[in-house]
Image (cartoon, rainbow, N blue to C red; front, top):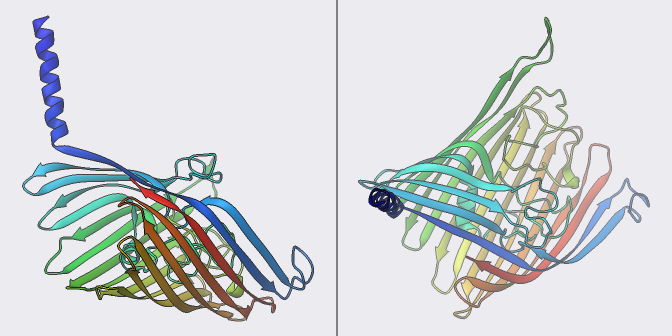
Amino acid sequence: MKKSLLAVAAIGAFASAAQAQSSVTVYGILDVGYIGGNTSVQDSSKGNTAGYNQGTAKSTVSQFGQSAEQTSRLGFKGSEDLGNGKSAFFTAEFYLYPADQTLSGNTAGGLNNRQTFVGLKDNKIGQVAVGLQYTPVFNAAAATDVGQLNNMTGNVIYAGSSGITSGQAGTNNLGFTNRTANTLSFQTANFSGFQASGIYTLNDKNQTQTTGATLTTGGNTNASGWGLEADYTYNKLYITAAYQALKQQTIANDLTAIWANQQANGATTAAVAPAAASITGTASNVQDNQLYAAATYDFGILKAYAQYVTRKATDTDNTNYYGKRSAEQIGVRSYITPTVEAWASAGLGRYTTFGTTQPTANFNGWQLGSNYWLSKRTNLYAIYGSTVTSTAATASGTTVGGSMNNYGIGVRHTF
């Protein structure tokens, strides 16, 4: 009996010692509220068919929705002290859909992964990690976006829309790829205000298929790429620049278009442009290059932002087919009172799609938003945004264009 008690005590002491060396934090965001919006899409080929009236289709939405200001999520992160300034760390983070009846949303097949990785850190040098992670461009934009990467339309850098589906507004990964799987990342320590980071992502598969003695379809699928980011802080000035190049190589034969599934297994997907500059088909062997640069300056009474992003995706089997999107945006953000925060942004850009008729389309957007802070973790918000895309010719000779307005009020709680 005494031996058993001593054994239990020893095991408990060992477990306590192990737990004292590591820590795990549960965190998350819940963002819910009212979301409304309307869209107008013009297509000269439609006439009075397929929901169009004289070539124009209009739609509205009014709903109790989610994640207008920030995507709802649940995460776990932890670290273990390895001694001598070294540590191990991990993060596992997943989407939440508080307005839907299923945990990961009605369209998701399971717990949707936002980022999951494990890594090692040396306080004097930096850190490395492996897993599904944010890209350098995304991290640079997250640090310098006036709207803090909210999901409402009007932000031309992070072109989003909440509650409405429209090719004219796009999704929040039109400007750049948010995350990649199968990724090795690094980040240096801060040296006199300078810091750098980067990724290398790789998913290379080579397959040979046989039926008896007969060789059939085989080949390789390679999703690879790299990215680098550097930033510098001097007093109230912050400057950052990031570049990433991703390539998706497949054995598919359809090379009539580009800009889909740039990175396999966990990466975001996007269309090259709204209908105003579209070409049809599914891409293979796509080289997707993305550049982002931004600066912020804190004047005390307000913080000023300047941003630029460009993205070009090329069908490497036929370089005459490519899509390019570029945009620039300025904005300000300030506390009007100790509890009321507001921001405003305006920007413009262009889609260029080479193909049969080399269509181009211009767009512009603006956004106003405000937070009322009830506490450090809970705020009420109101956001309004508008995006307009000019009419442009398509490969079939028709003209298309459109506009979108998006607005929302809600409550966001972080934990």
